[in-house]
Length: 376
Image (cartoon, rainbow, N blue to C red; front, side, top):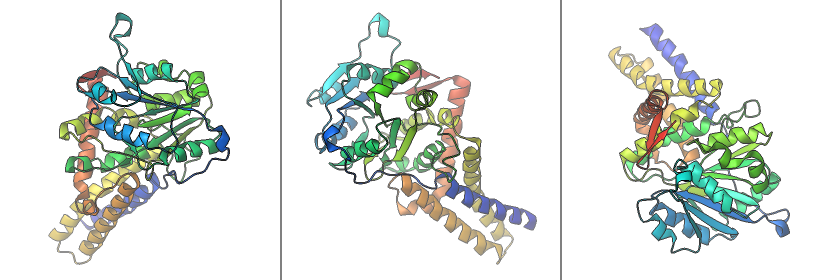
């Protein structure tokens, strides 16, 4: 038994090291100024929507307040069955409604909506943004474009919004948020040695020139994960991919409508996305999760052994792991301090969602989202 405790101790140490490894540093966008303010490119913002009557209001309201205004905002409706189109029509934006003619029946989903929007875009920069995202302050868009200017407006520029959960089931997304971000391979100490495995879907930006050069969404119409496919497109054209955290710039609430929406939302993509994760990062994530779930068992074993030596060690390590969990969670969202007390529940929720997603993607070859079956 004591051999197992020693083994468990080593496992926890490796687990904690892995936790620091997977999300060592996330770049954020801070206050910026333009090097050449007289040559700011015209911006076209494209928003694909399906049943987003509640979310789209926040995004459009924060867009109206931006100090840097886009040339055009195009909202592309993908057969919404709620009041999305009615709500959007009250704003001064272009609405492109997908028509169900014979030629377009198969062109459904977010990727197709982004493609339709790109056809109408006339800006020098194209920004594809999800409807549940909103800007944190009036200079947010200006700071984003100024950051892209430093990169010579070249490459695929993406941002993962900062998650602001409200209900308990939304807070269960903490490990998903962390692991999805870690899975892109670019936030470890080995960032320069590992190829970027993907991009963040809620906010994607590129120059119109490079978008057309790669083929853009038209090239990947059959995919439901445009962020990963666009990454491959840009990389195949030797163009860089840049991923940023949204803290202080962009925010969103994920799946506020209940546990069913939460499960469907996460399970539609988490297993597919993991296929692009580097084996080293995937292994580190697995070790981190295993260590976190092993700790409560080791505490229980120490209690049964009446060990005055092992019990305080594992209680200390539980507290340390919990603190690390909160530290990692705060990199990606505004999660409450008390979460660290029950972190095993959050890890178990992640495992449940991952295996359900794996079953759908690799066994059923289909997922459900927004009342629509999507073949994968």
